[in-house]
Image (cartoon, rainbow over all chains, first blue to last red; front, top):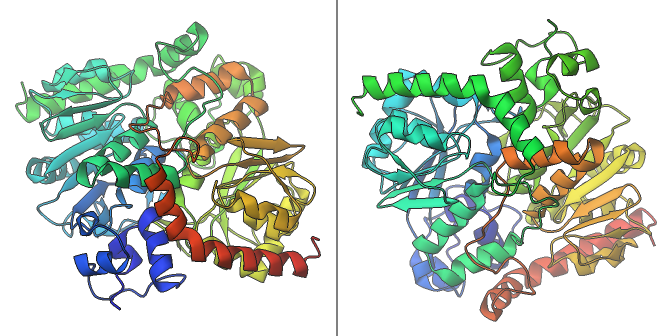
Length: 279
Length: 279
């Protein structure tokens, strides 16, 4: 029986399906490509096997959870290929100190992607917005991708690359008001879709973003099964996750911490917008 | 002015506080140690600066989101040192294909930890439960740690190491019923604490687990500020995150996928329990 590799199937749901099929702790690399017949062998609707090419951007100081929430959901797409792309294949350190190894450099990743994703961060995102090579790469791949997506302040990098002009979008709640710098229309929703632009709010919104996209690319039952496997029935211990519900002292603390940073972000945004003739 | 490094401060909240203090995109390594006076310089309660030593286990096939949710929250603990520990410093591939670089080998991590954390997975977790070196390391560090913690099927590795005997605990909803194999008492809650054992349910429960622990180790306002920065106000697009709310077809699909895997997990659990005299 033809058994697709885990890499070809993605993780989560597919890895478990693979465990069912092969019983092997880890399928061998380089096995025959995933196929509708393989999906059929697994007793799954053939419509559940896709062919998406997905690239997720890594840059120094990115917020790991912005990336890993969506990565968990998107790698459950059987048949999809997800790559982490960075300037080079050198390991990239996240803001919280996680060190990830990219599996593609800017030059190596496919030109035409189904999903191009950009995570956010704080000072690392500011630096990425100022980095011509990164912004040019985002403008190129994002300009051709079927879905152009981000979580948190990743939308500011999309904006700096001129990809949000005339689109509704969101960002981390503290930076959403910067979106007009790029000609975007800020919307106060957790996941905002306008045509093929899908942007998520801060950090943890990536889980809702990713699961929403899984439902769009497969079907509701597929997405519900991914949600059940991820036991995504959240119970935050506090109600402070939104400026609409957080206590004043928490909001004041965040605003005090961010004041100077937001000024620098806006300045970098205006420079980028001017360079790329966004306005 | 003494400025702690981001590594010493952790990411998230602390990185933003650091941005406020230093205005630098990335603080230099090797700067003076974080201190109450540095916290005071940042205009924060000195009680917010801690000294915790945290180690999070990496093993081949671990579920990245099990680890990165808690990592995001725990690295917001100013003054805490969080290390990713694996058998060796060789990069470790997660089930979904993320490749992380550990910053400590089993031999290098501190003997006495404040928090020892074990993520879950599927076939990778089964292999870890059967790996004597991994189980012995978990038994040693877990046996001495101030808090012994896990998310998802990570609790089965704690159990295999004999650390849950006589404790209430949880696991991924599909594997919670295996906990008695290790002498543990299964509890159907998202985060279960019994003395110094804190276990989370499946995958995404790690966010609730991590934020709960932040509140325990600092205070409510600190945790609420971390939650607000992470914009953790979840809006799952479906209500399928729990077996209590998921549609039957999704549950049946998961059970069909897992059947054989659960049999192999239980067998490995019984072997480990026998080896370590848990029962």
